[in-house]
Length: 85
Image (cartoon, rainbow, N blue to C red; front, top):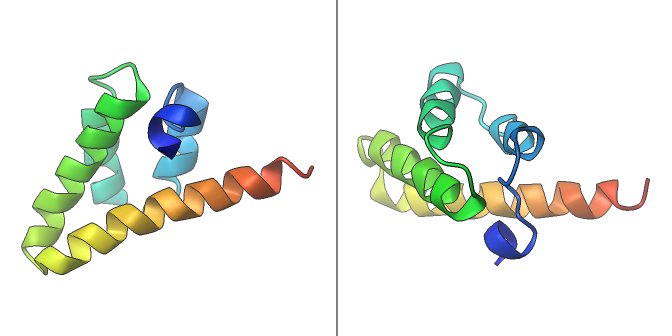
C-alpha cells in the first residue's frame, strides 16, 4: 500500500530515507545496488525484500518477514511526522 500509494521508493531521496533505516553497512550497500537496477517503487521494494530474505534466511526465516514490516512501518511513521513540519 505505502509502496505504490505513497511512492516511498520513487526517487533517490526517498530511497535514501528507507536505506538509512538499515543499520548494517554491507546489507545497506547490497540493497542499494539491487534497488538501483529499478526505477519505480514496487520493483525496488521487491529488490529490498529479496536481499533481506536472502541475508536473514541464514539467521531466521521468521525474522525476514518482521524486518520488511518494520521498515515499511518506520518509513510511514517518518512520513507522517515530516508532514507536520
